[in-house]
Each structure stands twice: as C-alpha cells, then as structure tokens.
Amino acid sequence: MDSGMIGKIQKAKQYAQEPHRLQFEKFEVAFEGNHNNYMVTYDHGTWHCGCDFFLTRGVCSHTMALERILGVMLPQSSAREAA
Ligand SMILES: [Zn+2]
Image 1 (cartoon, protein in one colour):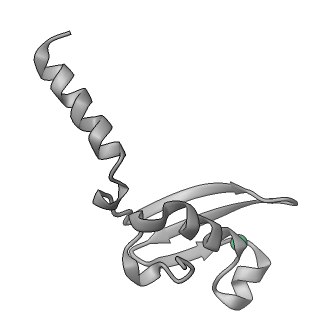
Image 2 (tube, rainbow, N blue to C red; image 1 turned 120 degrees about the vertical axis):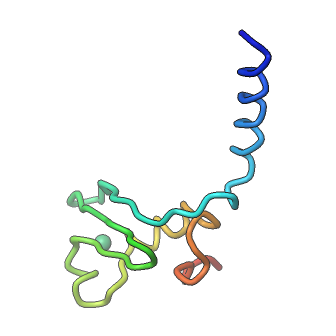
C-alpha cells in the first residue's frame, strides 16, 4: 500500500472518533419497530415518521431514538431529547 493511502486511512480513523465534525442534513431511515416498520425522514431540521403517534404529536419514539443515536451529528436546534 502506498504512503498516501496509509495517511488517508489514519485520517479516516481519527475522523471516525470525532462525530461532531458531521452534520446530517437529510436522510431516510427504515425503522423496524416492535409491531411495524416505519419510514423516518429528516430534512434540514424537520422530522417525519409514518407512525400514528407522530401524526398527532409531531414527535414519536422513532424520531426520538434517532435523535439519541445521532446525537452531535444532528444540528443543535433539533436535539430536543439530547439530555
Ligand atoms: Zn414514529
């Protein structure tokens, strides 16, 4: 392996330890719940989930779980459940 690639792999390992460098802007996730599967989307701070609870409350266990999983990789304004 050439030294250029070795350097990139070292840098990748370092970056992987520093998730605060990443900010998700949009994504779509297939979420396997206990009873059903749901499609959860995130677009510049706006969540959407296909479950019934989300329809009435605008937040649900699926979106809150993703907030916890992604933590610092979500823009701060949407980290309602960060604590
Ligand atoms: Zn949901």
